[in-house]
Amino acid sequence: MKTKANLCLRMLHGLILCFIVLPILAQESNVLDKRIRLPKSKGSIYQLLNLVTDRSDHLFIYDSKVVNNEQKGKIAKGTYTVREAIHEITGNSKLGMRVIGRHILLYIPTDTIKVPRVKPIQSDSVSYTLIEGSVHDRLNEEIIPFASVNVLHSSIGTITNQNGAFRLKVPDSIPNKTIHISHVGYQPVDLNIDLLSNSNSQIYLDPRVVSIQEIIVSLDNPIKIINDMLAGIRENYPDKPSYLTSFYREGIEYKKKFVSLSEAVFKVYKASYHSSSADQVKLLKMRKITNEAVKDTIILKMKSGINASLMLDLIKNIPDFLSLEGLDRYNFSQSDLTVIDDKLAHVISFVQNKNENSPLYKGELYIDAANKALLRVNFEINPSYIRKATDMLIVKKSKLYDLEPQAVRYTVSYKQLNSKYYINHIRGDLDFKVKRKKAFFGNSTLHTWFEMVTCKIDTADVTRFTRNEMLPTRTVFAETNFTYDEDFWEGFNVILPEEKLNEAITRISSKIEETGY
Image (cartoon, rainbow, N blue to C red; front, side, top):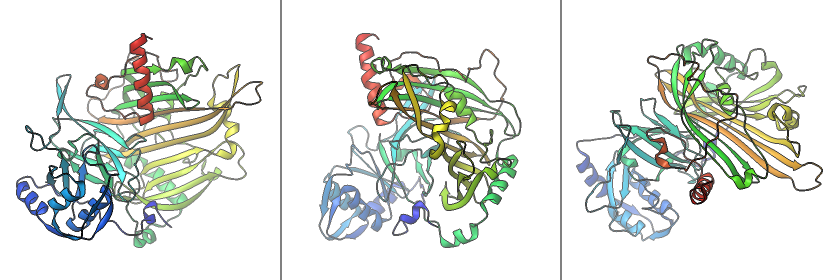
């Protein structure tokens, strides 16, 4: 039984950070002046800096504009101080260095600021610190999408987008300035906010190997694990309502071209997991952009994306593959063990029974091995029966086009706060094949998606919204043209647009500014 981390040929050392405030100058001197022996080596800057990491036991944080990972370099065999080795490898003798815990921050010094500091920003009379960067696998440098980025011991956080990038606004009123970054199958890392002072800092997570002893101890019957998870809902999930400040996004692509994008910040009234009360949504901010050139080709609208996001809280709305009544419709197997936020988790695969011919689901459940809390679910409509799901997915059919579903995938994750689990991130991706009626050729692709991430949790003075405050969730989201502006969201946290989406937004927004429509 192998986890993703078992693909590693060797165990990588974990990240154990110790932030020492008072003796930091002496620490910098000791580490940077430490003499290390390096072999004659060629390779990328990233590979060569890893040699320094292996011998100094310190990791690197830097802006990709300051140090280019892909640039080729070399170093001669010899003994160097850590500072000399860094200068030799990067080819930049003016590079600034600062040691924080077990990290070395690389930066470009200026005349006015000797050590870079994050800039506070003002929004609605509240001061924030803005940090941003990207998260990567240390072994192969690949991006890690949907990694959790949170302020340690607080309810504030976000996730990385599909390009592994994130931006987080941290209120200066919060005394703790440690950022916690985690993802399935990786050793989580805690970083002092000063390490993320440069924009686009590249952060690397080490894959976590699950030991043979952990596997042997944790083996169990998958049905028993699911039943234990269901029995533990009262213990693991809140028995009181809460407010979730959530960022929502939905979009449509046709023929791989951007059609429309809606974004919003909601205040969600999350009812107790122990009650049958419905969740509510209050709109705080919203905007939308439409590519009129593509919109004229085919009229597309996504209905009930917000309601779908609420319904995908699978603990609040138990699906058939988790219900006691529906378990016999599926085959379950414990396919793996992995780690989520440094906790051992069972990975249970499921697929509908062969005698079930209706469009059901297949996927993976991630359940905490210790307390049996549901941590994550990846699932999709069974591809073998997806054509039968057409009427479930398309509310109103076009007179000119036939739409046939090709893939429908969902991801749901939870995060822990004060020993209770709250919904963290929900995403749905739906792919269709589009064909003009009575045409023999010319099939096109249509991709729609929606996602919602919890950026803040409040549990004090929580009451239901009035009827006038509530946003209808089963309708097409309101349409409003706008000019994309990074400052629009002010102090709210959002998911950064993916690179190709950001390019499309910028291009179309520029056209709107020039033409007025």
